[in-house]
Length: 511
Ligand code: SF4
Ligand code: SF4
Image (tube, rainbow, N blue to C red; front, side):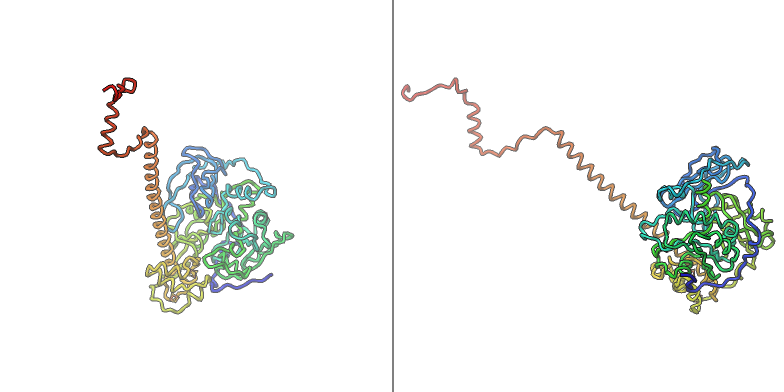
């Protein structure tokens, strides 16, 4: 099957790709220090395995995965561990998180690296290699890839493996440049993924405004059986459920995952890191970041993780006058940074320095006029105004009835709303509240279970103590039946009678 299947809603956005995609990818300068967050992925934070003062080599593991849904973290360069503490990290909350800071020794000295003969590995061993290499989705979600490369519990046989090169956010071009310049390496990584998933077909979705990337990827795919499928440049075609619909016509189940419909999807940059892990023995230490907007030299930089955003801006010529906001990710799905000293992480695909021209004009929020424009634009086919009412009224159960968690926070509804209601902010608020309530519930349930377990333990210990006491005590005499006074008298008489051998034998004849 070729062609594509349209999804509901979406936007035709004004593109700002040429600002940054005209130059080849440049390597960013080696920073003096890197601050590497131990949580750069969805799931449990990695456990630090280095101490302050320890020397580390480039590629050495500094944080090990903690549990199934977690990812390893590695030293992006060689040097000395200067701190293991909480630092500012890029997150919408602005809260700090645990990081390992490494003072670079300037040598950038590697650990021993060896390619992996993946064709001979058992699937679980191969997944472990990828897990130890810290591979997560680089499209922004940062979900550990080893988990997604295991189908068990979802479907028996995968119909379609999709490689996502759509890159629909209007300012981001890092995947475009990566596909143009390193297509063969991306396809090498894709082969590894295909070996694990054994899909019936492999499709590569790329928006049709990237002809050079389409040509490069098609050339790299020659003879592989993989198919490059251009899709219309319509936001949010790069969102997973929308790309699945575009390429396969399949709807992802509400509140479900594409894999439940027999489709799995990875970003092109993730496939590239798989290639580096397998063919070069290199864990994830860097990524391509689009640095763009109101700066002097927009470009794509290959950046060591842990490098500060301020350094990237400086290496891109610095800010131009009039920057109003710094955004990580695109203007539609990204979030504002509180500080440019935060480090680049695996999820950082773009830094946008936005002036007033790049931001929506500030206008007063007006009441909802029930025009329905938001519902028309919603690619998830939700009812955004209903979600808004319920989120605003803190009716979280009702918001969930309207599938709040199917909202991909694409921002299409806010973009088209004539009343300028910041709808997505309400959905994020409602989701955070629900998660917080769920956590409270879990805590209360855990406390209840602990209390119950303690009561049971105390009861068991009491029973055991009593059983031991019974074992130690001398056997109690058998209970004697109560005797009547006559029986008592007879017994006493018997007891006071002389022993038989001294008894006087009387004969009535002698008296
Ligand atoms: S687009 Fe805005 S004004 Fe129109 S129905 Fe939706 S929330 Fe209300
Ligand atoms: S942000 Fe959510 S509700 Fe709004 S258009 Fe996107 S998916 Fe729909």
